[in-house]
Image (cartoon, rainbow over all chains, first blue to last red; front, side, top):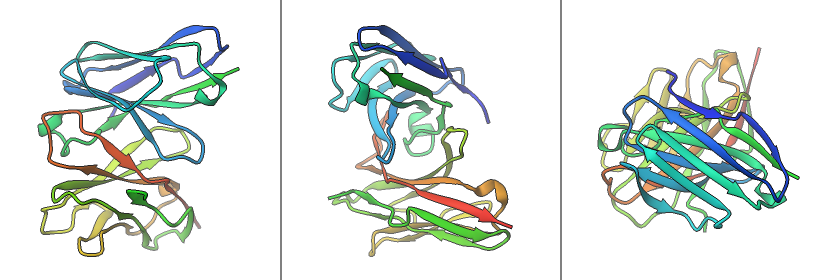
Length: 116
Length: 118
């Protein structure tokens, strides 16, 4: 089953750069998530959007700014990042009550971010 | 205290054998859900199986089954007839609290790296 796409797949940026990660799904799912996966650490939830409204903001630094313009697209805007922000950023989606009890049903392939 | 504990950083199993990946959880909620995901080396997370706290029977999905022992707060994943393609990192996760209309938070464990050998 395919359906969640992420671009770019790899990104290298300096600490003063501004970049954006993009996530897209056309499955009719009504919730989208950003997760951060760092080496040797559990997957960390960053943001959840349900019906385009942010319902979870897990104490993420303000240098990460999410945007959900519609139910099919989710962005993560990055600015003045730190080297410790280097990680795999995963987007996921789910169908809420109609999905598998609210957990992310599908993940995208992730964006491997390196901050120099 | 960690909410999800996976005590096996790495596991080996021979092809066609069954393997159990351990997961224990900690919650004071009565309503919660338990998930298992697989992450191959390609990086994409794949949902495998779900168990609700009120489900009376253990969940099964093909070769995957979840050994749910509520009193012990364990939700071990059993993979039967292992295949080479099962080699991956496996994550246990928990959703606490009642299901909301969408966008529920999961807490993940640190994962178990499974390697299937010939």
